[in-house]
View 1 (cartoon, each protein chain N blue to C red):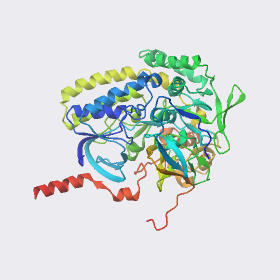
View 2 (tube, chains in turn brown, yellow):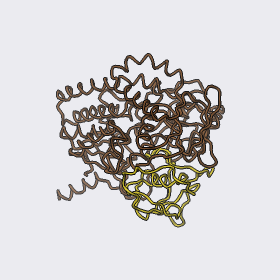
View 3 (spheres, helix red, strand yellow):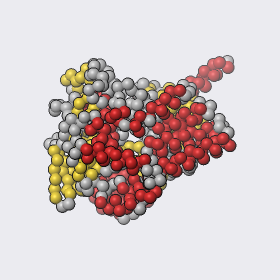
View 4 (spheres, one colour):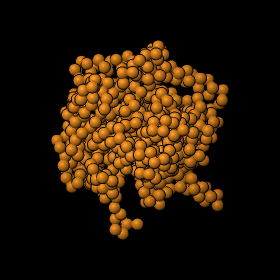
Length: 473
Length: 106
């Protein structure tokens, strides 16, 4: 590890692994930086672990991740595991923490491939212990082999909910109910995107297969549920909801939520890159061109962190950003780069074909975008939707102002869990478009750093310069 | 207090081979577990109380985004339980309310 590298890739999921390997295979020196102890990202979490569940439980799509980790292991990429990036500057310096000390490197090019996070699904009671995301459930299964045996309810909308249900059933787990919140009107909207989706029918076939598994196991499947509420004395005891005008309650001790995933924009926001509001996916997308290049020289984006497409799309985008950065670094000839980029772009278009259908079908229900007044939206500082609305009533016009009104977005998660919701509430209350309301101003460090870690800053670049001076003298 | 765990390990996976301490109580865990996963496996669902209202919270995202699983590990406060792997003999304590500055600690 030296202080200056040609390419630094942030995030070792499908996009980051593909970008790193492509660029390294073009002859670039590449560092791949990731928070986890092993490669894979969240989608292929624990893929290289001997202790993980097998294909019979997790399925073929997960197993595909092994191809990527194999090519990574066979490449010259220098993989920094268990390393947390807390600042990236427009001058392409990367600050990070590893083993209790901070490090700084400078890269000639950077690919940011930091993936997605679960879209917040706020409703009354979602902060009770026992409520977690479906993604958390998958991580528990992949990394620790944990399978719920009783008291599990899955709630929300989207393919991941069916996938985790099927994985649990294959693993001998028990599911009390799957409570779907997909609004009925979504089916109509999605229908007109069906012909496009049929251009790449694999996704639809897989979805129908998962639903068939649920039916075979006779899992209670509630559709079009509204007005969700988690209740319990200090911890989760039941999920309440309405359906067709009637109240229902299902006792549970674990509630796993999912209404899609959204780009993790902490780094791109802290870099002050422009972000566009995606009205269909209802999330912010950092702006980039077809090669993943941003308006900052040498900084590229790839994968779900730049817009949701899923694992296969992320891998293709990673290859594109890897090739484009190798071209920018001069390790790949422009002519050769163009031919390979064109081939990857055409595969990308094919893989993106089902997105409009999926995005329309699983568009989040409005009750989770701007939830009822008694819902905590900022989990860290315990600020409710009603409080945000009262700030608007007092003249608060943007998400950053809510911080001085009531500290929303100022806790340790730095707005990751409330940023979208606070802006949606303000947009809805003031009848202004999201693009105008905007988002929290995100400032580095994007992950907490202790003073001890800062004091132990290893300036790898300065150290390398010192060494070369010593050698010269 | 933990309630009986509602999660079970897959039968063909590795055994729980180490012991950690949560609030002073011995908890069996598996090498490679994160702190948060080991606590959930053992039925400990409340892993901190909030600084604002003092209500209980537990792990939510398991991927380092939500900061709900903050715990004290071997005396160091505010560690993300889902981002730290267990070690035999590790001492884990629930974070209770607002953070305190240790006396004499700059």
